[in-house]
Every structure is written in C-alpha cells, then in structure tokens.
Length: 363
DNA sequence: TACACGTGGGT
DNA sequence: TACCCAAGTGT
Image (tube, rainbow, N blue to C red; front, top):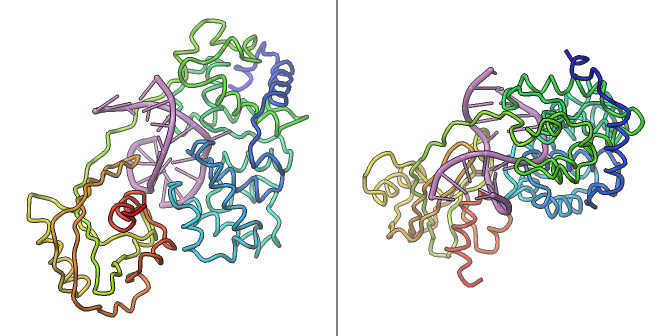
C-alpha cells in the first residue's frame, strides 16, 4: 500500500528540497528557540487546533509562569486554567498537568523518548508523540496533522477523506518511509510549515513551492481539488439566562462548572437553560432560591451574549439582580467575589464579556 | 467510528 | 452571513 504511493517517487530529492527550504524559510517562533522536550511539549499542546498567532502570547506567558515541568506539576488547577483562559479546549491543560505529574513521578522528570511511553501520557496522541519525538529527540517518527494530510494528499494524489480517523494511518505509513532520517525535526516541521505558508487550503502558492516538481496534484493541475474533506454537522442552539447577582457589599456570585464536559472546572455566573417562552427573570428567581437558597430581586435583562462553540451555540440573556443579605455559601464551588478578586478566576469567553460589560464598565 | 471539546480569524 | 479552518485527543 505505502510502497504503492512511493513507487517512482524521488524520496531523497523530496527530503532535501523540503529540509533545505525549511532551514532557509522557517518563521522565528518562541518555541523554536530551544529543544527542551518540556517546551516543545507545551507548544505542541497549545498548537492543537489553534493558530500560531493565537498561541504565541499564551506560550510566552505560560513559560514565564511555569518554566519547568516541576513548576507545572506543582501548580494549582485554577492557576493553569487561568493561564489557558481564552485558548479553548481546556482539557488540554488539565491533561497536560496530569501527564507532567506522571513524568515527574514515573520518569524522574525526564520526558520519555519512546513512542510507546510518550503516547501513554494523557493528552499525547499520535501527532503530538511524533512531534515531540522528532523535534526534541531527533527521532524519525511520523507526525501527521492537518497540514501534513493536506500537503501529502496533494503530493501523492490521495483522495481519501481526511475527516475520517482511519485516513491518518495512510499518511503515517507513507511517512515512516518518507521522513528524513538525517533531520527528522526539520522534515516534520518543514511539512507543517509548508502547509501553513505555501500549500494552504485555498489558493496554494505552487509557484513558490520547493517541492512542486515532486507534486502529482500540481503536475495534473488538481491541487485545488485536494484534500477531500467531508463537512461536519450543524451546530445546535441553546437559549440561556444568566445572572450577575450582587450582594450588599458589591460582591458578585460565581460558581464553578462541573468536573467534566464542556468548559469543565471553569467559573461562570449562575445560569439556566431556557426551553420555552417562560418568564426568564421569574425562572432565575426560582433557580436562585432552590439551588443557592437566596431570595433575589431579579432586574431587567442588561445584555445579550452569543457564544459560538465548535459544536453548539449559546444565546445568553444576562440579567442583573440584588440580594439584601450575604448568605454564607461555605462551598469550594460557589463564591462571592469582589471586582478585584474576579480576575483570578478563569471564565469562558462569553462570561468574560459579561464581566467586561457589567463589572468593568469604566475601562 | 463519530462526536464532544473552544476560540478567533479568514473568505 | 455562514461557513471553514488551525501544529488533535478522549471517549
């Protein structure tokens, strides 16, 4: 199967052209200043499904706050979630900490250098394993991400659906033979860099491509038709009502989201899902009474926030409310916080917008 | 296997 | 506007 794609293919020529191009044209990025496995690891986790420009400032701040594997292992969860706030896919950072702790305990603080061991770490899948092994340890391992599938789909004229999990194995199979044994790091990064800068999803820059002479899609003029990727299903929409509830000290009520699932363990303003056209302020009053044991005066709605996720949409109507007393919540998951304290907690972007409008109006 | 899991930017 | 996309993984 693999050798079928590589028949009559100039492997050495492709490797050299790609690596030479990468060494000459690679972007200067903060995580390229060091081959420290921990730093490479953090960057790879952040870069999952996330743009380079978005990651850069997060990476720099994260490495300042958690410079070593041990520092991250010892950090409190609220600190790492705050460092990840706004990046999305928050299980990434919780899994990263779980994995880092395992490296400290089981591997004496040294990131393992075999695919079997590194893949057993939480949050390290086939791509990340290959990326760390090749970039940090110089091992000739495949690292198949979206860029690589796009580039190789074109180079080898592969019309399998890259949205299907099984398709990744085809590319891994090719890469075991194709990856440079001389400079696996530059080869793998070069493939991704090429996908990011030249071999882009729409209007690829074939005239500038260092490997166009090896590209079968370019030869046939069908590069715009590849890769094949089926569409994902449509998002569902949820109507929500949230409340900024103040006590007589000017503090606001926040709660911690559930341990698992969407936005797990981030903080939020109390909210409910609205299923029909009921009186939302009345439902909120009832909700606060039953769940928080507080008698609230719920005012009019003050804001509407749309939160678009990859798989669903929240339409949030935000209400304002007051209570006369200050009930003791005595809970780790429900707190009264002042305006200055609230900055220490990590919120979903939709609730950050609520904070900005309701609590930081004098910005 | 298919779907859950975030967010912001590009066209 | 409404998609689509971006250095994927867990279940």
